[in-house]
Every structure is written in C-alpha cells, then in structure tokens.
Image (cartoon, rainbow, N blue to C red; front, top):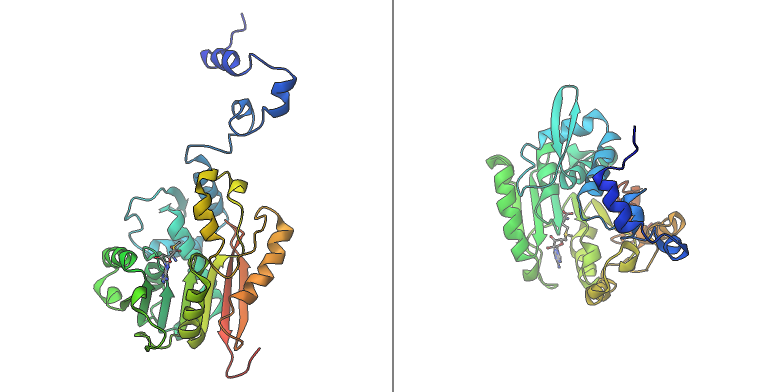
Length: 312
Ligand SMILES: C[S@@+](CC[C@H](N)C(=O)[O-])C[C@H]1O[C@@H](n2cnc3c(N)ncnc32)[C@H](O)[C@@H]1O
C-alpha cells in the first residue's frame, strides 16, 4: 500500500503546518492557532458544540425524578430554544438550558422548604417567565404568583405564560410594572410566603436592591436568591475589549461587586461567604440552605428564612 494523506490533511498540513519551528512552538496552542486541528477544539468555537455538551453532561448526572418533573412542564419549546434529548425508561425529553435551570430551582426549593405551605410567591425580575412556569406547574399550593419586572419584559412574560399555562394556572398570576413602584406607596402585592430573585439583583443598582429588600424580600417568610457571587474581568472569558463601557456599568451593579477569578476554586469559596451575607434581606433572616450552581459555580443558590422577631 502506498501511504497517502486524505485531501483534508494534505490541505491542513500545507496551510497550517508548513512553518513549524521555534516561533510556531511558542504559541501554536493559543486560541485560533493550529492546535485546534490537533488536540482540543478551539476555546473560541463558533459552534454550539461546547454548549450542547455542557447541557448533555449535566443531564447525565440528574436522577429520573428530574425528568419526570421536566415533562410535567408541558410545552418548553416556545421561542425555539436549543435542546438535547434525554431518553429515560422509554420516555424521551427534549431539554433546554432555561428549563433545566427551572427544574433545578424547583428541586432546591422543594428539598428545603415545605412547598405545600407556600401560597403566595413574588418574583422580582422574571425574564420570560421560566421559573413561574415551573413553579405553577409543579406546586399546586401556589394561589398567587406576582411578577415585578420592567414593562417591556412583562409584555413578554405575560405572552409566554399565557401560552404555556392553562387558564386556572394563568389566573394566579399578577404582573407589576417595576417602574411604577415608589418608596412611599404600599406595594400592590402585599407580603409573600416566598420572594424569588434569580440572576437579576446582580444587574440592578444597589439602591434598587435596597428598595426591593426593604419593601418586598424582608416582608416574606422565605427569600430565595440565585445570583452571581462576584464580578469577573471580561477578558477572562475572551470577551472583546470593545464592550468595556458595558463592563464598567456592570461592575457597579448588584451587591457582590468584588472582581474575582471565577475559574479559581479558592477565590470562589471566599466570595461565597461574603455573598451570602450581602444578600440577607435583613438581620431577622437566617440561611437555611445554600449551594453553588453545578453548571456555573460563580452563581449561588441561597435560601433565607425569617425568624420570629429575633435578629440573627
Ligand atoms: C438576566 S434577566 C433574568 C431573568 C430570570 N430571572 C431568569 O433567570 O430567567 C434579569 C431580569 O431582571 C429584570 N430587571 C432589571 N431591572 C429591574 C428592576 N429595576 N426591577 C425589576 N426587574 C428588573 C429584567 O427585566 C429581567 O427580567
């Protein structure tokens, strides 16, 4: 047999490996360089490969109950998200990352509080409504679920939730325009059993967070926060410098504003305890459960419960 390379490798070796020498050796494994055709795929990958493998591997670690709950959500495909398929015990579920997180959030709450006693929920900053969707499908005890959000985003969550919930479930929802809230007026939603803030305090000005803590979260029996425990420099994840202005504003938002290396376990550990303290709604609250996210460990789940009149 005469050894011949494929056309593919004939081309690659001529194009990428025709100048191998000391200079080549010094940087061939940097992002965008020739090693992306030899060993690991390029960190700057314009495909969905890493995203889909991340989701795929996270699903592998979940128990059957996770997917039983996922199926109970009904339609999770509005908006056309990217999915991976999980087949367990003969049933097949197309999982997207948004609702994957919703089921994780439900599981965290259900493991740590008795949801049969949670009738009134308020969520601050609900995005398209994925958490409301999951909780209203999975917890029958909820009687009212109030979403406080910016008006344009409320338009989306109300459309989305109308499409995925039945009439009885949708009737439990109230939508409050955040821009119409004022310090000196009573909130239109009253006190809740559970207040939720996911991935949004970290994008608000500190005085806005103070307002929500004082007027909403600290009035509740439980407060659930899932937010970032610190800020990171954009270049550590390869964000181009052109986004500096946005990055600078982001550094001023939230209560966990210290810049940390989110890929260093010891920096993450130190930041977590500061974060848990910073997001306590008031001195009357104690932490009853906390855990980092598996997928993005610089996010932290923290569940606080109000003491009966005693400061911690
Ligand atoms: C990154 S999204 C997270 C959405 C949702 N919690 C999720 O995890 O899918 C941030 C949310 O906070 C909302 N938000 C921003 N500023 C707000 C404010 N001042 N009051 C209420 N919501 C706000 C945004 O409109 C958006 O819904």
